[in-house]
Length: 415
Ligand code: SF4
Image 1 (cartoon, helix red, strand yellow):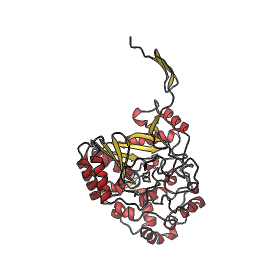
Image 2 (cartoon, rainbow, N blue to C red):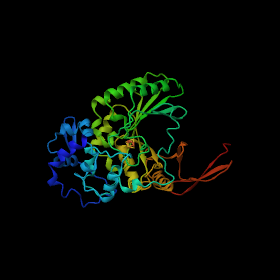
Image 3 (spheres, helix red, strand yellow):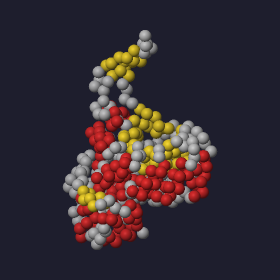
Image 4 (cartoon, rainbow, N blue to C red):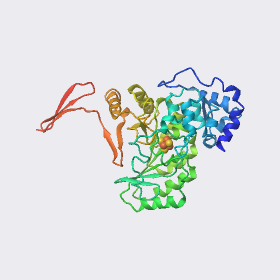
């Protein structure tokens, strides 16, 4: 049904499709967007041009309605090929996705990539390529063994004082490197009974002081459903903080409405963990969404997956971290890409991650330096890694190398 709506609208514009690809090679360059702003509405000029071409009868109000965005998401080869000149590798991949992570791209995110080349970093995030169909023997569908640590449906209890609570399998866009590609996008929707069992599990485990609500993307749920989930968790006295993991401000910023903010504000202290992969994701719309969240009093952190050809170099990563701080989002984790099936084309060496951290630490504000972690295969949890700054460590002293390579000493004996 969603695809049909797209198709109906896009069909009127078919004559304009010629020339929709650009000669520009955006690569790691950042796109800048000017904007049209009317009360409570925001559309960048880039999105406005996309609307003019492919949704000429759609109003700005509809475009800025997150439910409209979800209804009109691109979910098929047929609909996507009406707005993008797809490569053979992309076509072959989309044709063979059966049972794998589905295709889903919001019109908003499509407006950022529709005229790009296949190598564009934002396009690679969401448009599958044929390499995704190739699996290596080291890859596993559940590399973090979440199922093994799941006492009841939806709960993963791996660490002593906190749990992960997956409340939906739906996302507004599907990231091609998703760690939970084994479960997200599937029809296995949790029901009220599943939620109740999860609340009971948390309530009966007094050691749980932190609940991370994730998915899928929790912010694809309605305000009422979020209210129901959050109020039930907040009732549990030993839960001190709640976190929500979401990519919505990046791929569906229209979802950050005043109504959503007023629901979330009831459940402080509430932290929001965002997920960014490239500086070009920080558009005027995304900035506005993050500002609304920050103004709502939610501490914002960002997780980034290290991705080959997308963000695996110091200048791009530094630009991303700087832009995040400017929109009041604190870089939190940089993840080594997990060993999920068909992710070989996204994975870099671990050495690359260390090289990036070395290129950031000392050269820019400490706030702009995330913690580089490998989520250990087999369920070993997150392991932080640092470049080696220690030259020698004895009972007498520690000898260290600073960010410029200068050797420094600090005594271990305090007398
Ligand atoms: S938004 Fe998160 S859960 Fe959804 S596909 Fe992307 S990485 Fe996976």
